[in-house]
Image (cartoon, rainbow, N blue to C red):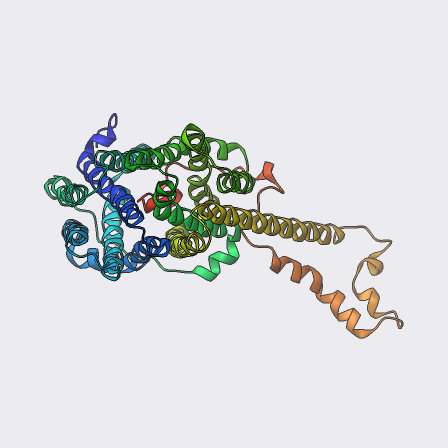
Length: 472
């Protein structure tokens, strides 16, 4: 690989990524707009997005098996062909039940494609160039998403033409990767799932990942319908979506630099607090035009950086040999959150009004802020109690007998159970067991020099492009 221009060596993979994301980014918006124009209940729109994320979750397991059996290129070609056929099914069949099945299949196929691309980049990128390569990969993904929105803006009446272009992009993304001269990567190894163990180890991070998934799923699935309900035409809706995605792209680098200097747990709480207020205002105020674009730009900056910051926060608190399992757990957690988010938000939109999309997101952000604050406070109190217990062990007494727990045993006024408790120091043991290994760095920030945003580990710090953040 060229040391000066590492991205040139992976140009085929990047071109494949661009075409794939143009198709996927426009397909979700197309389906949401199409159903909104037909006055279909919001619950169906939310269900379509939930089924897509369900497919991503299921595809994470299936993709490993397929790639291990037939190799990366064959797995990618087969997945792309199936996804392309599913996109064209929307032209032939208008039954929503069938569309739900197609979205599950599309999600499974897309996850397999993501796994091929990212595992290929991970394996064959030199350590000194990993950050550059994956930064370019993320930029390509965002540009594909924005390109898909701009493509839709050229078809204000929708129709079948956008679906034809989407299917073409899915088909054409096969060509660069099929003709690449690069050596095939080694077969994937299954990543173990240890969900409960990691929830105890990094509770703040996984809570933020779950909420980020709920927000992302709800936004990408239902924002087009929300925008259409405000009287926007197709061009205005695609501009609304493009501005939000562009904000997420522009915010990644500066937010990563900020997280190098400020504790990530504090940034997560700040983002959640501001998101709560911002989305509540978007739900209550009749914003339109330029004001709405400014609001959604700010939303993209805050919401689309939750996942990478939370993922980086989780990775800083685990050992190196646990990071593969953590990555699999984070992706599954994000996918499960994204499955439920659109369903809940669409139900509220149908029962009350389209503005409930942002009311739902506001509730998610508030729940995240309260949860993070509670966990952070609990960890501070437990840590403080541990420090007091440890300091007490080193206090000087008037003699060896006074400082020994055996002194209690020589006092006839003391109950035997008290002696046993003092000998075992049960309070300290119980307190120690309550402190998770991923203790919040707010307490001893000056001692947490390892708290940094590592661009050399983008596969852990970013979503697997699933409606980014994971982008779709």
